Length: 95
Image 1 (cartoon, helix red, strand yellow):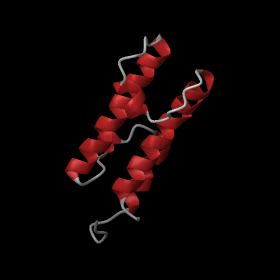
Image 2: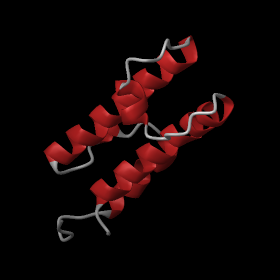
Image 3: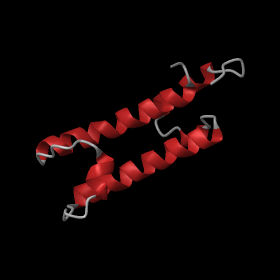
Image 4: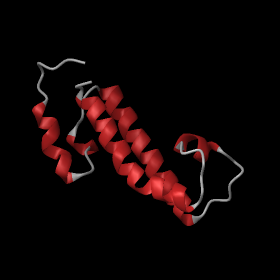
């Protein structure tokens, strides 16, 4: 619950959802899972959907890389307002 990795993943997902959920509402998408939506081959995607797919792929890649490293490095923090948050974790915190 108190892991910096969990917080990073949550922040990344929240940032993506600000774009994804309005897109789903606007296009009447019932299954709100981006993984399912983007893996489907039955869609002809708009430019907006293509941009969201890139955003989703980038977000997923950042989260997976941070999990593999076991630490949130500065180069993966894409939002300036969150930079100082991860400095609160020290070596005394464990997974």
